[in-house]
Image (cartoon, rainbow, N blue to C red):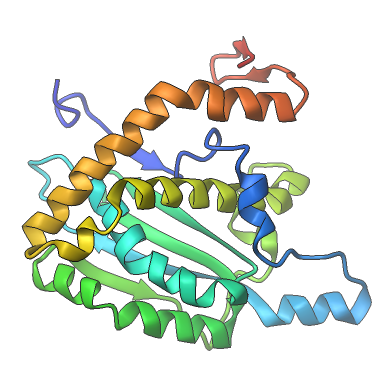
Length: 250
């Protein structure tokens, strides 16, 4: 059955709550926020903020969204920027969403750093030849950057879900950074250099349609043990409560 006919609605936070235990190693290569006191902590808060680079992806409403375009953007546009500026980022992650509303299909790269670093990262993204190619081909309709002169999200916890407990809001960004790195690494391994060899936008999209199937297949075949089980083990095998109040261990 078509997901559209089924009233399909997707809002993905890069297979996050489950994409998991590797987040520990994923965070290890990036500077950590260390406990600070007094003026030092205040200076850190004033220096760093969360910034969004959001890509509005073309989605005719009589068709299903091209979700594999997210993988293309992450690998061909954002990954080179990460390679160049990773040492300047305290935290970073991806966000994926596609729903039949005003926001539509949007992929975001979200990162925590100073305004000066954000300006350099935005400039690097904006100068991507792959981005120009996707915009020219109508694949990406718009790219939005925050105003670096007016930072709004200062605390590490400020882009976490406000319904969560405050300790989780502060800890979760480290988890999702590792999950995002894991997802990006899988894309990189399955894509290799194929994207760079694509002669047309259609060929480029075909590469990441294949890669998307490979990544999804890995998640379906191996995610239960590699991610869910090991995350459950990390938290001491305690059950979690699903929305229907069912207890579950992995």
